[in-house]
Length: 112
Image (cartoon, rainbow, N blue to C red; front, side):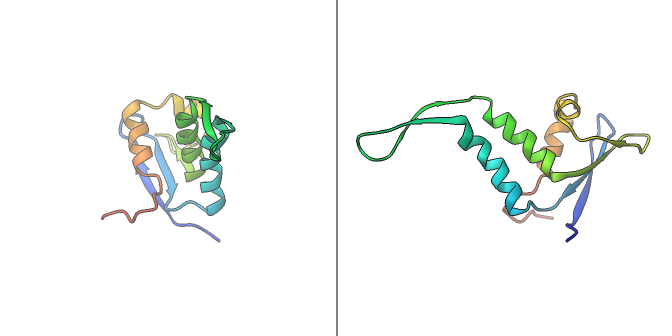
């Protein structure tokens, strides 16, 4: 099944991103698992476990995974395809990264 995409131009880097308009259920589970795997729990006498510690980098790992799963393709100014990887994401100007994040699928319908 081919999913629909939208094209987003990142103004500072000039990169064009083709982004899926929705996540598949399995992709959403992969993103959510990062947070759950980052937490360490300890048993409680009252039934519910208590949070013992959490890896503070889980949020950025979730952001990276969300982009890696949602971006179908990146193209440079010259039209050549750019591999979607962490190094490329980390080297995007912050404003471009924010625009890319805003283009990611959400559970809410986007206003046109």
